[in-house]
Image (cartoon, rainbow, N blue to C red; front, side, top):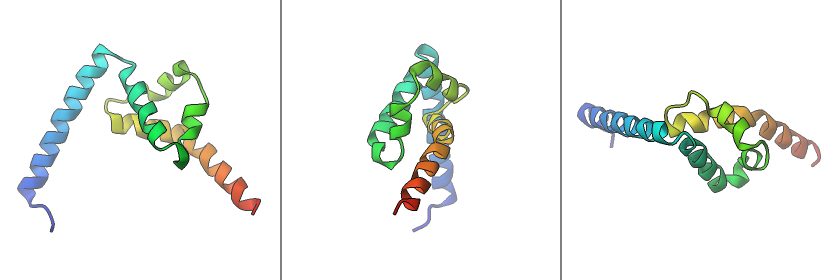
Length: 97
């Protein structure tokens, strides 16, 4: 069943509050985003995120994440940084079959 307009507005409001709280946490601890993205990467290690875990040091990763204000934004920036390597690897694997 589709959500009503009121339910969608409420969900958007909750998301806004969570994002504002997350941004406050990031201001206290700038490495929080890196830790959270790394946690996401570990949970999705076999889905291409091994590239994020196995390459680059923390300083390089922080540069990639710079400007992200939410976990979703950080994950998007991280994926955009590694997706070309993941796609290339998948092409090489497919070509070898």
